[in-house]
Image 1: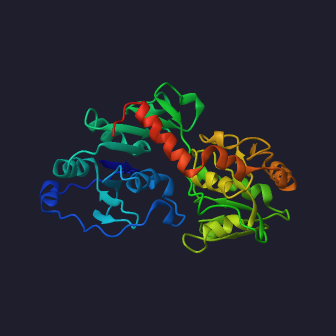
Image 2: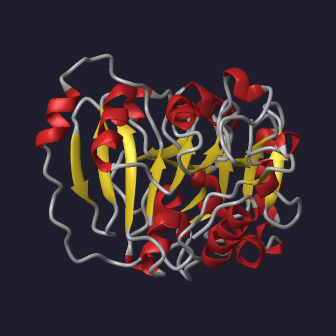
Image 3: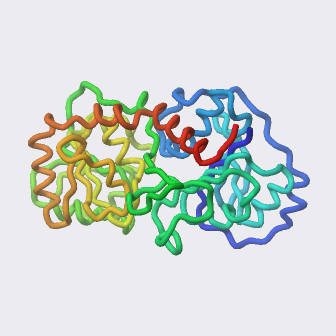
Length: 338
């Protein structure tokens, strides 16, 4: 069985002789692979976990990850997944002419709609709309079933999406806490670092932002430190923080906020976040806050953090293997056969 997981960036508007290129292409050699739980904690776990899990179970023979990039390539990840970088939709279609269609296609995000449509009646398709735009805002379309971030989009072909977390790598640790809060998110408009910075400016609260370039933020009169990609171990940052925050609004169920709760941190989340509100169980995993009372809620959660049970709740409802099996069971119910 061949499985493809896609998380397409914006397509690249270049035109090449794709047919000649793929006709000459030689796949890289497979190498010894590591299993799902041998992977380090990294940003892509929630994307590729289901494919590697199916490799581990012997259900999948091939698992590929597709994206658009200026640099076209095919190379194997250490977990055995083939990473294929394309320029655009035409490139992908010619590749499938050469190597065939997948049996299962899981698409994350809005840039995969053209490929979802192309694969109609050719394979079983799963769509994870994530941050919705265009027609996605009105309905679920373009696939056999859907993993959705908000209850308003639930229908008889969908279930709630939970980013899969590597709970064997991300878990609480008995160590000294070095800061009051951690915020794991790149710095751009929808992540709303400004809400957090304005809330804690001039207070005694200590925090850390990762992965960001601190020189591009106004950190004046705050007790906030920053690191960029690969400058700090994320698991260590989580274990040495007291609570987590997620002030983003124009974002939807980011994996990082689920990782915070899996690490045992109660979380304060912007009440206007587009998706992923099912993570927050008041008094158990965290609390919602508005832009105006973000600091107030942070202080309340900090003062009562020992009463929250984020890790326990996470493991009871969203443990790694149980979530993966839940997804596979749902796909079978919707018509996927293997």
